[in-house]
Image (tube, rainbow, N blue to C red; front, side, top):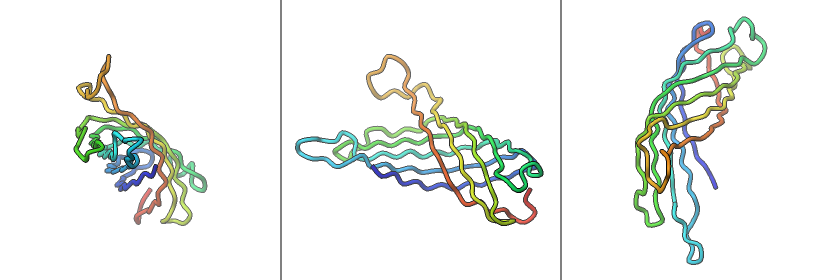
Length: 155
């Protein structure tokens, strides 16, 4: 199974707190259909659009090391699942929240690397598409690695 992901992050930081917005699209093809083993889900995708609050260790305390941060926020999750016939089986927009953390380390004064892990979960209790005894929720973990670019005058 191959997963393709496209993400863009826009972040703004003060000395140790800030905000970010993060639109993401993840596409996961589930397999191919054969005569002996039909596939019920041929393609699925999840898009998230969240606004987050970021709390980081002050730069002066982590000047030459990795700088840890925690992130949390809310937004929307867009879910699409296609059945084996190419018809949209599920297509929903859900309220969502995310929590996570990571580290950022700079290789030069302007260019660095960032790693984080986040937990996403739908918070909309009306999402029901199967035979369930309780409310259905969509949740998943996501790990990212990114290039960080510090704009002039960044903290």
